[in-house]
Length: 157
Image 1 (cartoon, one colour):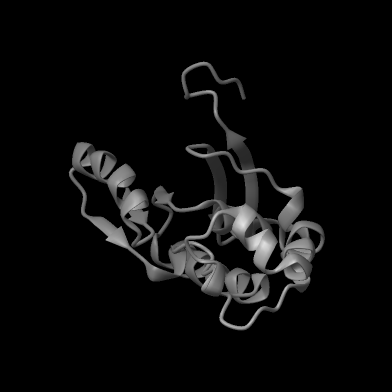
Image 2 (image 1 turned 90 degrees about the horizontal axis):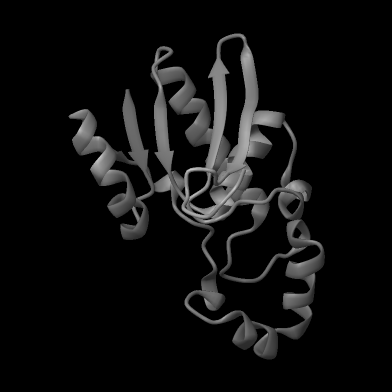
């Protein structure tokens, strides 16, 4: 078994107890880091909407078309996530890999599994702390479960 995380602290901190319980090293992969927001990084949505109203509207309605200087596009995100998941599938020899990452990366991983592109971004729900299960092998990829929150107190699948 492998435990792989985004390098961001919130993902590593969530992954660390599982890696410790399994007595495996916690691996990090920068390609699993959150969507880079560029000039929007760290701002509240209301602030982004106020300062970039046209771009915010595009992000809310057709995010795959947004190309804002300094901000990662969904096309770039989906390419780096596909690269990471291709590598994980190749290098894991059938072992289970648990990945701790972020909303946009999970959406891109689902798209990778289904062999679809960034236009699906707004059509995939990913709740905080949800579990999405993907089976990838030499025979193909399957989406087994999406956005499962049944393990969380007071939540249903």
